[in-house]
Amino acid sequence: MVTLLADGGGSLDWSLVSMVNGLAKSLPHALDTALAFMGEYGVPLASVLLLVFAWAWARRGKDAPVAVAGVLWAGLASGLALLLNVPVRAMVQRPRPFVSHPGQVDLLMSHQANGSFASDHATFTMALAVGLMLVDRRLGRIGIGLAFVEGFLRVFMGVHYPSDVLGGYALGTATVLLLAPVAMAVLTPFTHALTRTALRPLVVAAPNASRGRAATATPQPSGTEEPPHHLAA
Image (cartoon, rainbow, N blue to C red; front, side, top):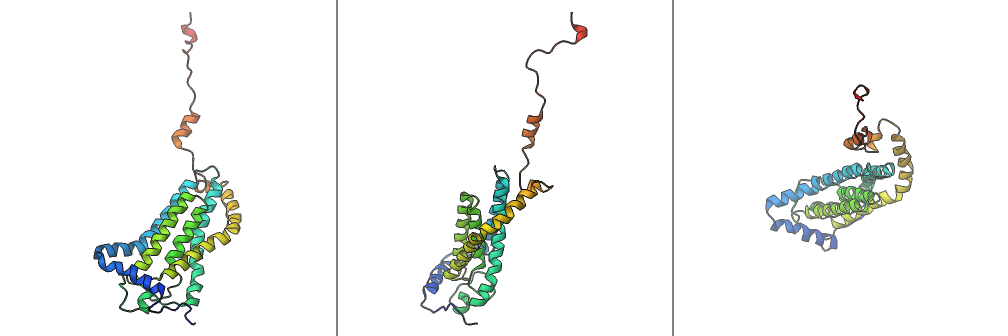
């Protein structure tokens, strides 16, 4: 197929890659390596851990089944967005910066020379963040912050153009928001149904053990106990 996104030497996309990726030349090699690791693995892992934390938090809420359904949709939507990106990349067939501009990019980590648009990492992190935003705004803001960091790092590493990142953000956001009504209509009854099975702890957190013991303990009499009958005068 014909490449839909051209990358001329004077394009804004390339200028931004050249500027951001150029920062790597002025940084210590160890720091470049650490940032590349964060961009490839660290930030996506942090997003997943945020999702796990959101699930643990949602189980303790007043309407736990609905909140857990929202967290479940955030995870499913991020995976679905990645699947939707497969035909997008095949259709666009955009070369990566280090392919279009050989010798002009400081490639910080070995990478396949496959399609650049849209960024999988940006798609995944933003879809997860927007999904969490529908559940809890504070967690969603943290997720969006992680997605922005991830987008910057993908350009810094020399493996994506800024428009690849923006395309990933758009795809992830659209996947979550457009399908959320249908997804929640299915997932909410599903999580409610789980509360009536042995899998209930996955949806509703068990009450605190010590609190449960205190609630069921036999109350002690406050007055003086009546002496046994054989001791009564």
